[in-house]
Image (tube, rainbow, N blue to C red; front, side, top):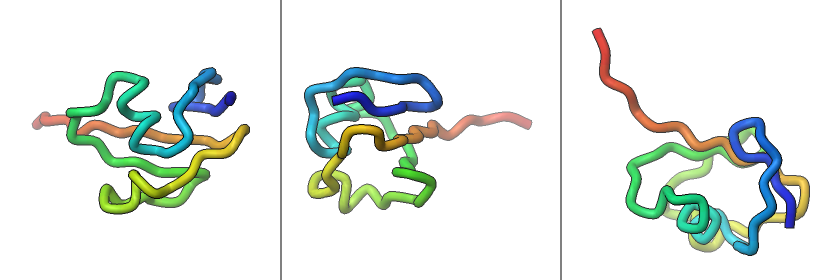
Length: 65
């Protein structure tokens, strides 16, 4: 299926957000996610299905000062 990840089109085999994160290399990363513009809590990633054309945003915390 083809989804948009952080503004870039990606072809993935995953069918849930959690599986997509693993496929894209973020399995162990502490990240925040949004699906189609809505915040997606970590607790629901494993059961949240992805559909062709979905937009997934993955944000990692940054330190700075």
